[in-house]
Image (cartoon, rainbow, N blue to C red; front, side, top):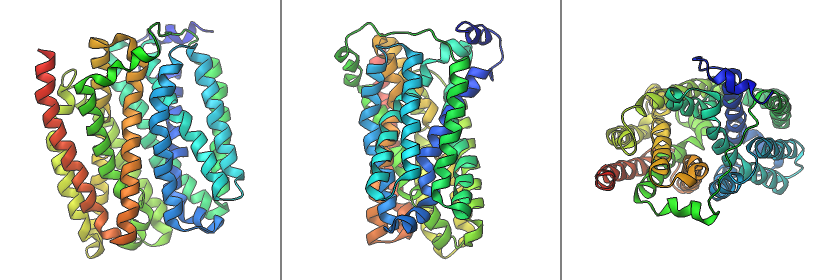
Length: 404
């Protein structure tokens, strides 16, 4: 059984069963992480807390996700991959079951922290399956599709979860996530390869990767890129309702449309990542960050021009993940070139960086929403996008100097 997936990978098909399962795993991780955005008002009403308090779950989740991801990934490289992956999926399942039965906000918070502690490591381990489940020329495509699992969750999972919450209560959404996770684990046990690539370098030695200036800038670009979107995305449901004036019955549809835009963003990110190696793909995105900043500023007029607000949100979804695959290429190429013992850790950096950005963006969004209102979320997000543009320009300069 262990050799079957590897032989499947030797065919030239991309969508083999192991690849589809790893994409579906990302879908489940994304649905569990992001569904709070769609059912935020339902949780607030059910637990008798404010929407901002529930919105803080997004930031807190990311604050835990970020440090646990590199630590978990560095540790996981020293143990059998298959067993570690399934064990962490078991922890993920336990967290979602606890969410479903949480009697109050503190218990729900503890459940979300449990999920956050393993989610990033699960993504990083999934990336390390690439050589065993697909051909080398599909590397950027595999990266893009694994990340796209999160966008598919936005397109399908979050709107379905929101609709289920509206019809049957928010707890049923977590029952569904738990049931799908059980089915996924059965499939993983059946088809994923058992072979491991155990890291033989010391635990602390892996973290030398963090002293590379290209890694510094790559992390900061992703932090700012994610922060620019999550300033407003955390409050997407209230924005659709109160700024774009979308009737309550169409909010789920609005989330679907936004999710489709995000899916396109993730898939097109794979195309952009093919433009060179190392720092080159991310450096080429400097003008994308500038365009994103301009679009975010224009979101401020949504309250007065609902039709424009709807168009702007779709376009913002199309910008949301354009840097994902390029940043992952940067981390993996730098590790392969200069720090070969840190590949597991390198695979975790995009998830870590993105969730630091989520945490900062969500926290800033909460402050802006409380003190200035929803209208100002876009312009504040634009500041992050501009910072990402500046750092991508610096990356191009430093990267060329280092790689000479």
